[in-house]
Length: 213
Image 1: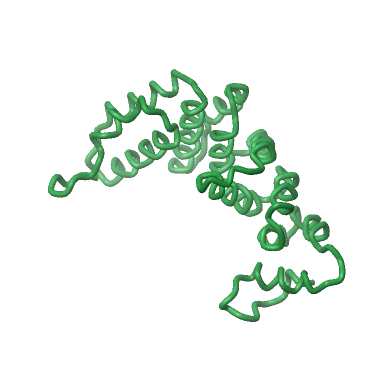
Image 2 (image 1 turned 90 degrees about the vertical axis):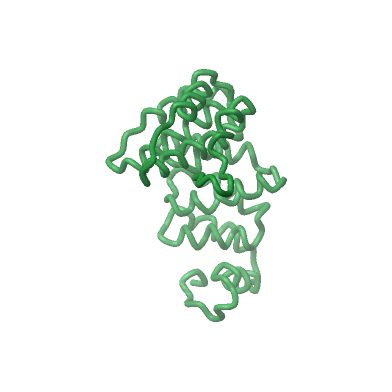
C-alpha cells in the first residue's frame, strides 16, 4: 500500500512521494484514497488527495466529515482558510456544510473559524451553544468560546460585538496569564472583523519605548 511506504527522499514531503507513486498507477487513484479518509490512514490520504488534485480532493475531504478524525479536519479546514485569506475563495459551500456537521458533533476551533466566514445568522443557535462550551482545560474552553463569540460578532450579532468591545475596554491584568488572556481577546476581535472595535483595540498596540504588550 503506497500510503504505508517509508520516506524515500527527505527533500520531498510524504504526500509528494505518495502522489508521485499513485500517478504512476494505470487508473484513477483518488476515489480509492478517498475511501481511506475515515480510517487509520485518513491523515495521509487527505494530504495526498490535495497533492494529487486539490480541486477534486477538497470536496472529497469535506464530504467525509464529520466521521473523519480531527487530523483530517485540520488538513481540509486549514487549507480552506489559507486559500480563503489569500484570495482563493473556493469550496465555500462545501466547507460551510462540513464545518456545521462537525460542530453538531464536537467542538472544533477551525470549524468555528470556517463557519465565521461562510455562515449567516441561521447559524446563531449552533454558535451560541459554543459560547457556553465547557472543558476541563481552561485554555481550550476559552479558545472555543472566543471563536464562537468572534463568529457571532462577525455575522452580525450586536450583543456579542458589544461583549468583545467591553472585554477590551475593561481589561485589567499585568501578569503572564493576563497577557495570554489579552492575546486571546485581541485574536477574537480581529476575527470579528468589525471597524467598531478599532478604538477598543488601538490602546493595546505596541509602541517602542512604552513597553507595550
